[in-house]
Length: 225
Image (cartoon, rainbow, N blue to C red; front, top):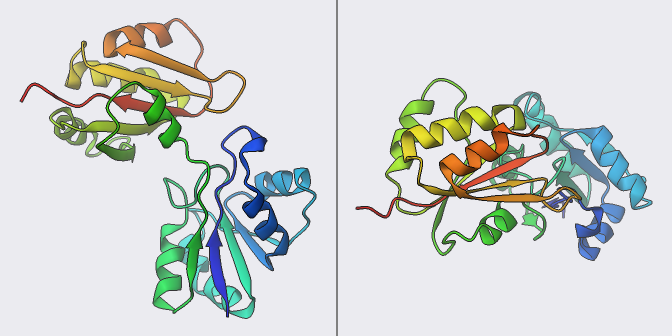
């Protein structure tokens, strides 16, 4: 019977791929990938040469029915994103939902995801947290920041390097200069960095350097109420 398996891929360090993931990638009849070039480089590193088909945020609505048909033709299909777990701020949700509606079994392997190590290593409470992913770029951004500033649980955000300074400035404005935060950059890579401190301190830190790499921002909850 056909099934879809979601496989997390390394977010930086290629050693973070699991033995189970390698085995399934090697035996899958088709691999749906966010960027086929990125996935083919990983497969080449693993000495795997399977069929890779494009499936990303720009074409997932248009290709959904065709992808479901393809999955039903094979025994095992795999979905990967460029890095981390598919569906977490990456394509995947629509395909998973469509498979469930079509009666196709869906499995997800445990594995790399940027926000978990960032949260745990931040030094901020992680027993309860809110994952926000990327904030809206324009419409609704200020409203969302106002709501989050009152949140008592730890908050997890994703941000791009060229927007980091603006985002940190808004955290100072909406959450207060003394709110404890941690900016995690280049997780699992050679230049991995955890910048911990108040929002103002972390903002000043990154204003003095060129910012590169994937960014996770951890914000301590509002404990005043």
